[in-house]
Length: 236
Image 1 (cartoon, rainbow, N blue to C red):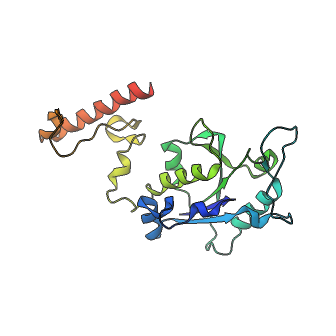
Image 2 (spheres, one colour):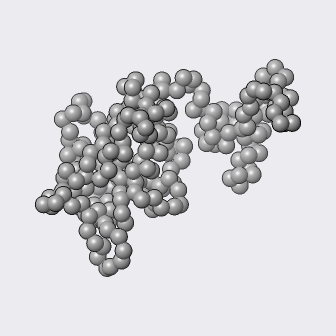
Image 3 (cartoon, one colour):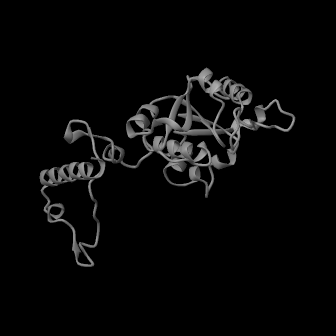
């Protein structure tokens, strides 16, 4: 999969430590060639003499708004890039607090796409007219505000990377994650169950006996019940 990112801060997407993409699962996906991330600086497409990409909002108010022209030109230049052969359909995404809430189901859908283009807004956001014209998928990672869409884009890339075939050491790891469709529960999307490791006793707290029983079916039932209980208690 190829992920293009349009941003005014491309350095945030460097694939070397200590950057987010230079460690752990994303780094492995990049190293193995299962994921390619290309960050493009929006300023390179500004028609302004000083490479300006933003301006004051009409109607007044604080902050700055990313202007239409550089975003429009950059998106079309990226999608037509000669470096992508064969040409792959590009799914456009804008990271914005006003977007659809990112969920595991959305991540699973996007992980099947051949190419994504993440547009990282900044400041007060992007001129609504270019969003209307580009018709991207608008996604949010939560009901709060970040300085820009870059961190949200990195969250999305990380979530997708671990679902790409061959990236995780055990293919069942992602299947058993929180919010993944639970095979033993008819596809319910549940929170994960509690996990334990050595030592057996720690500060007067013991590992549940069922996990030490060797009874595989009993363990499966216990874990499923724990998942359902946690989901009811923590997600209503």
